[in-house]
Each structure stands twice: as C-alpha cells, then as structure tokens.
Image: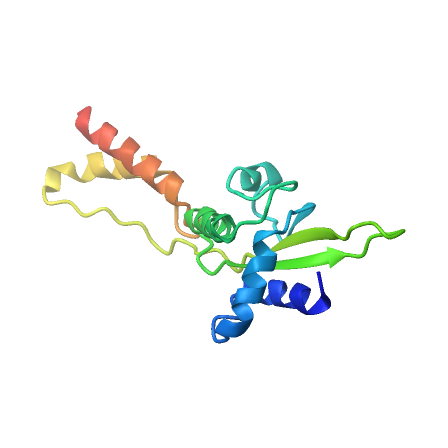
Length: 171
C-alpha cells in the first residue's frame, strides 16, 4: 500500500473525503481490503473497559468495515448519553505501525473518546392533582433514587420511575 493510499484511508475514516469523489474511490478500495491488527481505546474514565467491549463491533483480526465502525461510534455515544454525558465526542484514527525486518505493517485503529462534563440534575419535582396524595407522593418520589446534583443517569431514572409507580399502585 502506498503512502498516499494510507493517508487517504486515514482521511476516509474521519469523513474528510466526502468532497472529493475521485479520491474516495481509491480510499474505499484500500479500506475494504484492510485487516485490523490492534484496536486502542483512549480517553475512557467513566466506564470499565468490559462495558465498552460489549458495544464495539469491530475486532482485531477482522476486516475493517465502514458500517461496523460507524455503528461502533454510535454505540459508544449512546452508552455515554445514557449515563448523562451528552457532550461526548468519539473520533477514530487508523494508523500503521512500521514492521521490523521487512514484515507487513500493523493496522491499528484508535478510538479516542472525549467524555466532556456530565449533565447533572438540577431539580426533581412531582406534580399531583389531589391534595391528600401529597404524603404518598413525597415518599414515593424518594424511590426515584436521584437527587439534585446527581449525574443524569437515564437507566437509574427509569428504574426509579418504575419503583415510584409500583409504590403508588400498592396503596
């Protein structure tokens, strides 16, 4: 693979070749014939590596497919959004490590995550129509499990709403 094709492949992963159809044909052919040797995940502090491995659809030893790469980025963003990190950014970069002693170069996919700051809950309020339900709702709303200042965790919020509904139906 020539140096130009390596460069074009890297650009195509970033989506920078869309304005140049003549170049994208060259990069697409080189991308479709590329096997991954290594995947590096950088910038992750919120999740354990095992949590992220579950949503990554590309694997070392497999042929790199654009659709799987795009889905992997979307899956990582969705995972972070669900945990309250709405400003997460995910970038990918494909590089080659020069082989020693004339061997073939290693294709390395780097997935860089910029987590940003989490979205925090400012206030939780439960509105009710019946005045005699004030005590019930107050104790039921405590079952949500989130309070102002907590990170907006959608899964925890949905579980809390279900717990609150269960508490209200049991009266």
